Image (cartoon, rainbow, N blue to C red; front, side, top):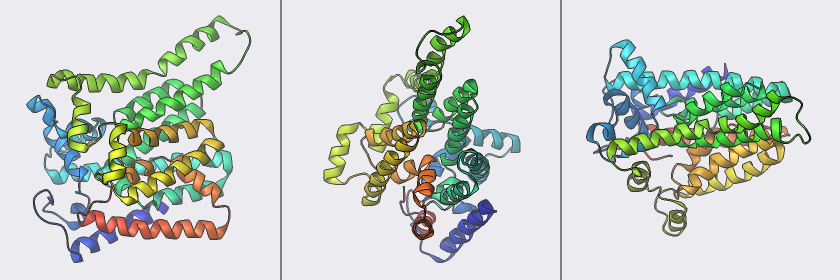
Length: 366
């Protein structure tokens, strides 16, 4: 019910904005010649994902470093799969299929998130956490043609698998997350923390030879998602004849060329906004509270925030942090009074309305 209500609210809000508010026009502000309820989702990165799903990667076609090298393949590949099944290759089909994938992943995510928290803290905190996620200021990205929901789903599946001691499944979902977003590498830390707690924290002699073998091989297996990520960017580099192609694409087209550029951003304010800086500070505070609560969740949250920070650009920092699910859990725990929770809901809803209206009218949000 919460999923349906919030998604319906976004559709109505977006429809009103597209129909009655001025929209940015000109080169780079493409729109789909179809219903406003579909066109409202075709904004910014959605153009890249639908183009990759429909035509393939530019770097693969032209054998040179291109902007789409920064986009990982799993999400557009899933869209392409649905396009092929439907025998449709238009932008409208790719947009619709991207929306279907994102919302299905979001629906699965909130069920996993609810069950995961309910087991440990009961119904109240679980409901509050899911509500905070669905009412996030950047919830529009969870239902759009973006990777947020798919990454959220794979992250939650990784933690669920670790919670149930299904380490092989956790490696598989973490590997898929690394092929969805670069910050999928953040899941390496929960994997290693789990290995340490399971096999290395216990001192003394090991009881069996089998346990000794597991103690040796399991840490190696935890590196598989990282190797898969490295393998993919190495493949791109080999294909374009430049092993640093992935990093060059991020530096040339997306201004992400290392921590040194972050100092330049703080001085010149080029790439990012004050909002991004404010949310970056908020996310760092939430990392501290999350770390104090749980080492595994805190390690994931820290890495998920550190990776975009170390890229040297705060642009889209708001969106990067919005997909770190432990933050919503931490907020639900800290809002231990009705007035605190009501204030958080109010701020989230107001920002959600503002950012959604900006997004669908082709104004940069994150």
